[in-house]
Length: 475
Ligand code: NAI
Image: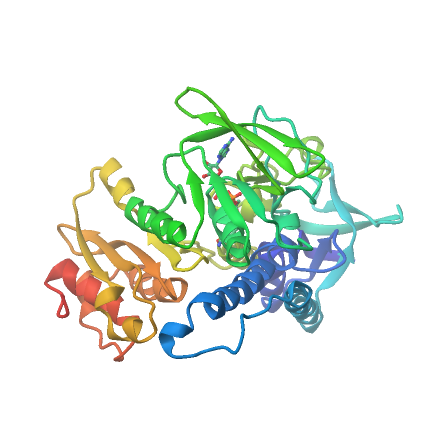
């Protein structure tokens, strides 16, 4: 069988690409080395973490937040961690089985095994991928095009020697499956994973200390959002050590010890805890793919180099998602997957990298799209700002969710919206109101002149837009 396209990796980039390619009439093969589809996101990332974030938030609210709403519980809410983990597993199963169903429905041939690209002769019309199963048996899959969608893996910490045992020294994978709530948890890295999984265990009762190299949490987010986010987490009991470089991670008989020193230099400190979660970023996953022998060039950070149409240095071999440059986000990979499928089907695939939302699913949520104030300043772009706090929003008050604000950044000359940033309950949903506007090149006045239902949290988005080009009503 000669496939039109062979996709290696079934994460959100790979499986979405496969479905789109099949929908466009391309004969499609998908290779996956796990026994289930969906990659990191569905199996050990986005989806299971959201299950635990939701359950732990309900538990935290039942423990502290119901009284003020006039709901009294007979006793203290009890944590049933095995049941919470079972809920997480059910969600994983439903999603990974859902992908398997969609692949079948779209008549995509799937191969379970590890894919390796075989070097092709210069003028070859076809590419070959060797798929090796867990039992060592191998088969060759042949196709006109290959798409590398192998994602990323946990990064090491430069200069620090340790190995993940997923019991005391945890990556995000281990932190999603702890058997009991640790009394003390250390987290290295106040990025997205550290913030989300730190929040889960803090809500369930652990004393969480997050050690971060930078002077701010959520490094890529707008500075104001990041400061307010940090304050909100501190109010919930999370302790931060910012501007601190981790130098040592040691597994001990009882728990772990983590040493760190001021990033600017100075006396160091060591903290002991039951477990440590190391969340210092991820790196492209290309081990065993045979890229070098196949002539596929990678940059200094191991990312596959691609042109504007996601084609690598070898004609007919493409790459999408975490394995190439850009934000390591599932939805960015999905959009690239769709675009490549469209290109291979003779259409015009496109991704607007200026409008890729990012969401941190703690409480309150932090969400962002487009440029931050820091980026606009660095690019010397004249901009205006409109802000509106949820404390002035009726629906937010009614739900006791008045923490946070909406901030809109627009071009000082044209009023075109250049960025939107939200901290608040449901920010991850509301951010798309700004994303859609930006996709259509809209101005803050366009958003402000749209009728929003009352009472909704989203009215704060409209008020922030009003504040950008005129004045808000409720401030
Ligand atoms: P990250 O890049 O978001 O954060 C890593 C943090 O670790 C940075 O703030 C960095 O300054 C810090 N760090 C690095 N070395 C350090 C050291 N030696 N000592 C102290 N701090 C140190 O990476 P993270 O959280 O591991 O996430 C990996 C990827 O997964 C990210 O690209 C993220 O966008 C993605 N992701 C996205 C989610 C979402 O969209 N909600 C959820 C989880 C992950």
